[in-house]
Image (cartoon, rainbow, N blue to C red):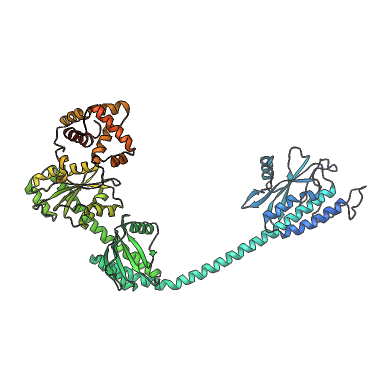
Length: 593
């Protein structure tokens, strides 16, 4: 219908019912014989006037979707029509308009696609007449307008419909051409910008190649000579002119080249340090952290240190970043090599400690300890470390080793399934190792057991049992986190692993059996109440608070304990035996009775 295409519809003259008659696109419709010509105020004249207003609106619409929406909205101005559906062509497909009806959407959509660009009838229930009209521009199909009518349109109404279709198609052609021109202009501008960028890049290539060649040459020399942190920072400072530094993963300074070195160097904050490491690890390449350009040294994913440039004035450019990245790569190789050597040494240490804990001859132990640089002839302590939020893996073992070295402990190290073992050549400080590990792990929830001193190699297995005993007692005490020494355990030393288990059970049953049975029958906590009462030194307020009960409730329970057990808490002998029994019940029997 739009352009030079004629619409074939059903009419009485052609022997078919309904539809648009054939006719040229620009021919003015003639009134049928006997029909009166339209006056200025007739419906036809008003329809033509409305079509003129619609034409302006169509050509002023900002886009194809708005044009199609206007045509569908004003279709009734051309006659007794309804816009059943509209489609816009996009990338070889027909995209339905949001204004399309939902009742017959599937059948109409299928029919329009079957037409494959041609006009044709569309069958819609309750609509005697329906037609799919192509919206065509020069050389392309812009879309479809599917129109239905409550009655067969007259010739004048068909002519108005044809005019609306042509206007819509023309407006779509203009909108398409404008959009295409806009896209072409954007593409042309993008091509020009890309060409300018390539030109700038080409200009800087020579300078970059020279800078990169200098970096590669210097870093290769460092790697070949086996230089460490000092050599890398010195080379990086010479290349960039900025102060360069290396810190270990905990923030301790390892090397500094260039002016401005702080003295003393700031003590690292473990929490802030971990936050910084996580932030840098999330980025690709060096990251600016305040006045520093920072990158991580991590050869296989594990962070071994931090390499940074002090760039207070923000002078660093892409050449500086390139040099920093390559310096970090060179340092990573060196630190990875040192780590491998340390792991070999650690493995030798573990094998020696494993044999010492299991029992080995002194001559072999002395020779092997001398080979790894440790003097076993001195008095030693066995130290057992367990941390609630860390599994006893290689990583935690290395953490314990670093913390021990940081507090001045010279030791051999191994690990078991749930704890790490140190054989140290001096008595550990009561708090230093625990505090160092709390900083390393970020949590104080750890327990350390220390044996009595050992003056001979054959004595070490027994000292290992003492250290484990000290750890066990601490874990079952009210203050379970911290350090316990076996020689300070007092009564708990005689309740050690050598005690006869059956005899201990009998002792507990004699003094607590009735209370244990009462607790089992009544789901009560009399034994636990008695244990807490003794732990708090007989202080009612403290014991009640630790049990989260009222003071009067505690008094009632203690009275019931006297009645059930037939023991007098005021009697010194009964009180001592009951307190020892609760300790055995808690420590040796695991509170199981």
